[in-house]
Amino acid sequence: MRRKLVAGNWKMHGALAQNEVLLNAVAAGMAQMPGADCAVCVPFPYLAQAQKQLQGSAVQWGAQDAHQLAQGAFTGEVSATMLKDFGCRYVIVGHSERRSLYGESSALVAEKFAAVQGAELIPILCVGETLEQREAGETERVVAEQLDAVTATLGVQALVKSVIAYEPVWAIGTGKTATPEQAQAVHAFIRERIAAQDATVAQEVRILYGGSVKAANAAELFAKADIDGGLIGGASLQADDFLAICKAAQN
Ligand code: PGA
Image (cartoon, rainbow, N blue to C red; front, side, top):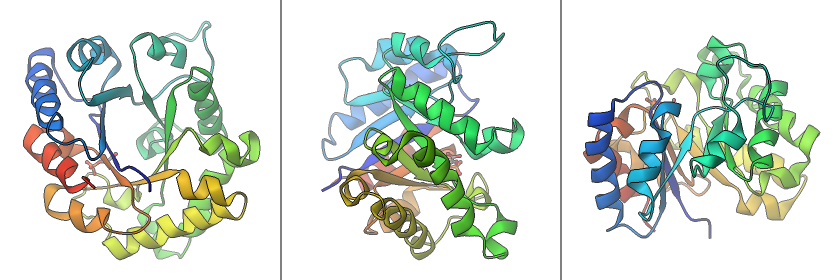
């Protein structure tokens, strides 16, 4: 049975003093909830703080992006090997905000995915369609293209030490959650597509749902057969909300 994972994506939010309160509260709450994994993906400058406060707790931490190369003349960039120095476990790659606002292609995302695994960290690969794509009946085509970019270049086995996050773009930060049935349908599609190449990998890989997950809808989503937890944006910034979601993920 796949162990559920709830990962917070703080995006560009946070400040030292407020993070301290939030991280302490999440660590304290998770000490009482051994039935699921929990992580927070924080902005780069706060990784040292996350490491200091979360080390030894039940909460893991990670980053929201990484460069595809280990080092070089790339002003402003951060490599996966640097993230490894701060005890990260997870790195989000291919978030829709990176794809749409920073022009990241699926090919580049696959390179980042490989770099993260090369540093022995776990990529959280985000996939998902826009509203126009959904309305045009292109959801499966789009998600398949984003997924295949990784498996075609790195092989399906690369998914073993990874997490996939299905995040319909129209549900991110909009308050519009996919219904549990809509989410389950795409999760099942992703798992079947992987199973066509390797049934064991498909059974083992965790597929998270992301997009306006909150305490009120988490349990229904997580009850679906192919939904193995959530990637949480807005609701990960409030300890009570985030912990309520983690509670809904307990086995
Ligand atoms: P949201 O963001 O929970 O605020 O919709 C999810 C995400 O972008 O990962």
